[in-house]
Length: 283
Image 1 (tube, rainbow, N blue to C red):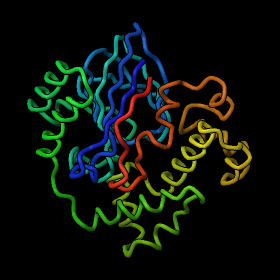
Image 2 (image 1 turned 45 degrees about the vertical axis):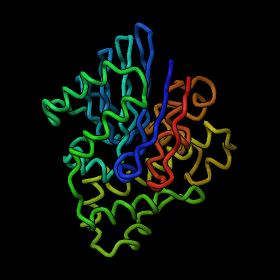
Image 3 (image 1 turned 90 degrees about the horizontal axis):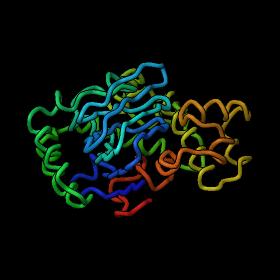
Image 4 (image 1 turned 90 degrees about the vertical axis):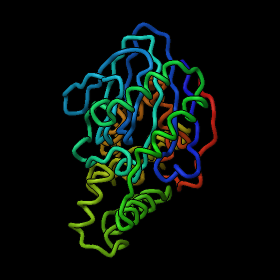
């Protein structure tokens, strides 16, 4: 198994957090995905399906558009499996996908239908490439050409939500977000749904659980990790819902790909655009 990440060019860092190239030559690949960010996935090799938290299953089209996740999902792929992915910021979702994120949450949308013939030609070109650097250079002109302007007010709300969720020393509270944005709470909720795929209260739960899971993956003291939750059972339920694992299985039998995507340096969805990560290899 190989997983590599690469940073977007500076002019795209407001839309994209990272690119990644995943390769596995196993005959069958099964695993669990955390409640994820919105992504575009180009299936370079392999076919499969994703089962979401509500129990429904979507087949993987050649270009997968994965909406933001509100719970952990499982996947199954007949390999070998090679995939080039684009992890999107909420503004990037609006600019490139141009669909309300909450209409696409916890589901797979056919990227061929969204991107048309240009997207399918891009997929065929990517299938002839070997390196993440070549793929990144090839996909970025497509993303630039596809992106449409996002209203300044919407960008400001997205940045306020990112800043609200980002601190690692406290659990976010919805009232704090509403206080930070000079709009009605109803308007804020509508925009947060449109770009993040879920209302603020669910985002509060999601990122509290993901932050806790990341801390456990990176060796944090479980007693400190449990502090933002009502009690230990609450922490266990929330981590299980958003990662598919309990604190115990995170420590003993974590899916290796999930463990990598829970690292604080993986998708960087709460980092400011100018702090994008450098290319790196994970095997």
